[in-house]
Image 1 (cartoon, rainbow, N blue to C red):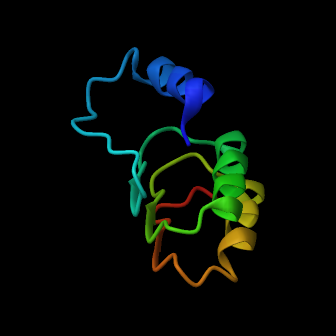
Image 2 (image 1 turned 120 degrees about the horizontal axis):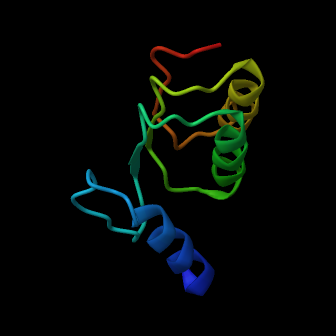
Image 3 (image 1 turned 90 degrees about the horizontal axis):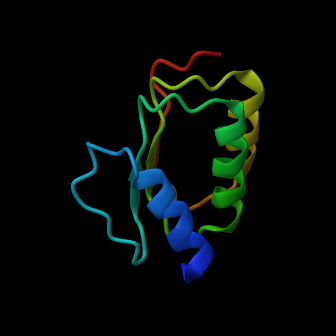
Length: 94
């Protein structure tokens, strides 16, 4: 459940957004956040999400600023994930 905290985070993130055209938060299957200046701090949050999320099938992270440490966190969470079918890390900074 999104709750107030989630709604506040989304609202804060959307303040300056000029790209997002649609956001459906019910049973998310695909996340495309390539080329968004995400670094190791963001990778840590993504890895924590991957640890709990059991419905995500595709995650696109290419062309971000994630280094080796951040990628290790993400890969550690997806190694035993039987649901995530696509992890796109093209142009990984590493």
